[in-house]
Length: 102
Image 1 (cartoon, rainbow, N blue to C red):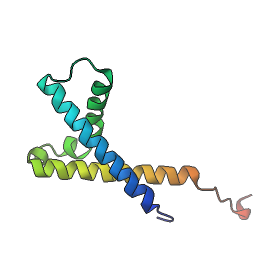
Image 2 (image 1 turned 90 degrees about the vertical axis):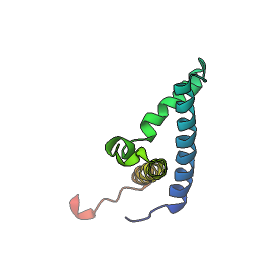
Image 3 (image 1 turned 180 degrees about the horizontal axis):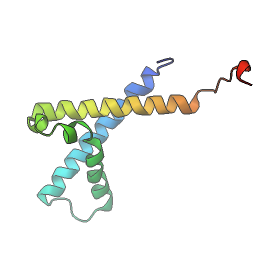
Image 4 (image 1 turned 135 degrees about the vertical axis):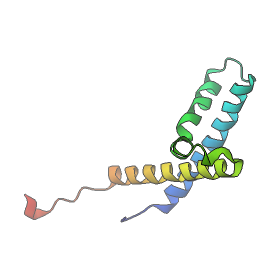
């Protein structure tokens, strides 16, 4: 992996962790019936279905323990951050064309 941008990775991990926490709180509020008809809160709560993938979806029995569930969310945030960093790197990196291939 050339030119890994660790600063972007850390910032993205923190932002995704906050989003995962907030979406979890909103999803719990919907389950308890405390959220009302707010479109924004329902949208944030629906983000939890995305944020819990792949660890909680693929390893349901492992994530029944609250500590394992939290570790799984952190792993998900790190996976998403890594994927976003690599995608951004490939989009913004200049294309190198070899002279021999022309």
